[in-house]
Each structure stands twice: as C-alpha cells, then as structure tokens.
Length: 416
Image 1 (cartoon, rainbow, N blue to C red):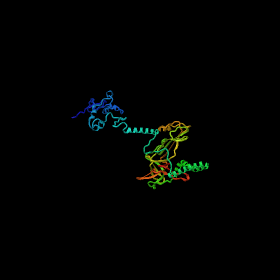
Image 2: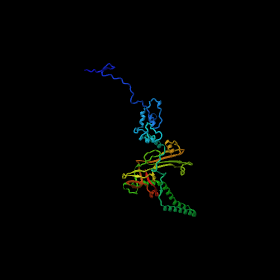
Image 3: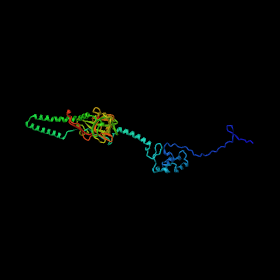
Image 4: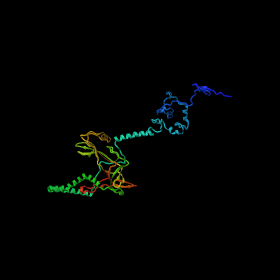
C-alpha cells in the first residue's frame, strides 16, 4: 500500500515536498526594546540613576523616548543586585547628605571633585604651571634649613688687651708731654718729635683697616690643604674640591641660576651731595648698601687629595664667612634710566622703589660643580664625615712682612 507524500508549490513556481507552512501571527516580543538616549555624561538625562541620588531629572513624559518597563525598577529592591540605595553595600552612600558631586565624565565618586586620579592629575598640572609663574615673579623663601647671612663678613684685629692698653697709655703720655714742653719751651721741635711717634701708629692702624681683609684672604690661600683620609676628629682643616648640592639646592634671586650652594644679591645706591638714602649710615659721595640677600645651605665637597666626600654643615643658622666676589648684573646711571622688566619686577617683589636713583645690582653664587675651599673643624659621627664651623675665631697671626696685625674671623670660611 503506497502512501502519498504531500507537496506544495512555492511562490516562485517550484514544487517541494511537505505541507505548506502556516502563516504565523505576529506575536509581541518577549523582551521590550526601546531607544536608549545618549546622556553625554549628564546625570539629569539618565533617568532612574539620577533618582537614586535625589538629583532632579528631565521630565521624560515630554521627551520622545518611552518610559522604562516596570521590571527595571523592581530589580533595585533585591539585596544582591548592587544597588546603591538598598542592600548591604549601600551604607557609605546613604550616609552622605545631598547630591554627590559628579565628574565631567559622568562617573560618580564619593569624594569631592578633583579628588580622583583625573582630578589630581589636572590639578597637578595647574599647580605646576602656577608655581612656575610664581617662581619667576615672586621672591623665593627658604625655611630654617637654609642660613640667611648678614651684609658683610666681620673681620677684626686679634690683639691682646694688655698690648692695646699699653699702646693707648704711651700715646696719651706722649701727647701730654709734648704739649707741655711745647708750651714751656715754645719750640716746634717738640711737636715734630711727638708727630714722629704718634704718626706711624696712626698710619699702621689705617693700613690694617684697609688691607686687613686682603691679608685674611692671603692667609686662607696660603693655608695648606689637608687630606680628609688622615684627618682626626676636632682637627681644623682646609679642604679644596668640587661641591655638590645637599637636600635643598638654592637658586640665585635675580638671574635664576639653579642648583647653587651659596647665593647672594646686593643692591647698592650712590648718594651725592644732599641726596636721600634709605641707609642712615650712608655717607655722601659713596656707594651704600640698600638691600642684601645671602643664603647658604648644607652641601657636599669631594676632596682633591683623597677623593673622600664630606658634608659641610653650613645650614640651620650656622656661622659662615663667605668670600665670593659678586659681579654687576644691573647698572643704573644718570645716562641710562631704562630699567628692564625683570629688574622692575625684582624691585616690586621686595617693595623697593624704582625712583630716580643711581643703583647697582651685584649677584654672586657658587654653582654645583664649582671648585671651592672650605675651612672648618672635622667631625665624624656614625661613619659620616662632616666639616662644621669652629667654635673659636680663626686668627691669621702677625704678618710682619706685610705690616698687618693678627686678624680673625668667625664661622666656616668659604672661598671660591
């Protein structure tokens, strides 16, 4: 018995076996599909997400997008659904009052704007650029680790009190005896004899006042360099070598030379007849100091003799006597009154007037890599070799060939 296989004809005219498929009725999709709006990072356009944080959102009834299905909202009540409004992980979010700050990218964070990595990076760039601008236009201030020095190094004469009193008594007696004999005898020979005795003393004092500083520098230059390898604790030495910056490098105030161990800037003004000066001790027809900035910090020196490296303790208020010759960087004369913008800014940062004055700005510094000489006391502490200022003033002794009395200076001697 044969069974007939049903067949049917397609719309193209081709006959195929099998029964024709019935037309399926249109069924509703099991999953709702809707157009998702592009928020662009705006929380007010994100619908339910903004409601969870009590942020007013746009009225969706006026927009062209359909409302979300109810099933989406019901998932926020499950304890493990990751909701920030309910559940065990939402305590930190619910404690905050008011709307949380939003990043420009739409990311919600618990901290203030700028506390994240992007905010910190962006604020760091702004801070660095503003700090560079401030460094160019404002005065650099250092902490207690950097020593601020005075105007000039004080160089005195090292003469005992007994000798000083003896000279004063002899001079006073000679003047009194000469005056008495001149009145009694009435001859000028006595006055010449007194001048022959007192005159050399006055000339010697003036000579020492003028050449005393140069005599000290000559003493420092002739002092023999010591080898740090064989130096004992407490020994007074002179070390010559290359310097490197310590933990706080310095910068010259005017020319902005970086990585220095010593910087100085001195502003001088010339006072003519009847002129006004800021410094009350400024005499007429001379140059007087108007403003001074000198800084020095701890640095390292590599000895040429042994190659050892020592820490020079020049910071934290230590006594330092620098002998560094500055150079003139700005010279304002009567024929040259055109002040540069950098000099005007430098004066304004220090509240100095730029009126009709004859000024001269000198600046000196010791840059990293320079060769200097340091005179101080050796200290060894926990395998650390240091050079510290001497507690006693350093005396040069009598220099008879140069007719110089013993001069002394206090602190760490630094020459370049």
